[in-house]
Amino acid sequence: MSNSSKKLVAPIIITLLIIIYMIALFITWSYISQMFLRLLGSLILLVLMGVSIYVLIERIKEIRSGEEDDLSKY
Image (cartoon, rainbow, N blue to C red; front, side):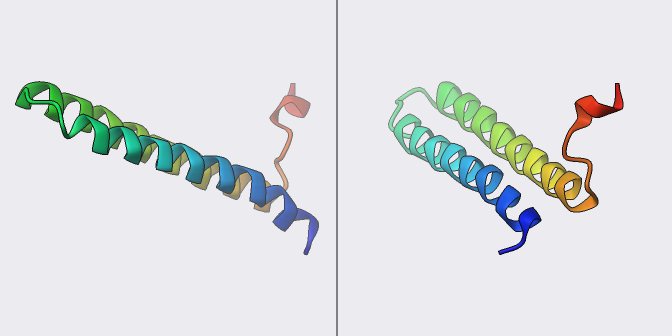
């Protein structure tokens, strides 16, 4: 396993855990009787899942390009 592959494992696992947690919340919120709250909660969770996946993709690009430490630029 190469060094960059090892650095990809943690962000992927964390993102998967966050998405699994959000899916569990989504299922739990589907039992709310008020339709407005159900839709609002579902929309918020879907946006957060999308942002999580976007951040993961950006992190993978950073690791593959060698820009792992953004603080070194400053």
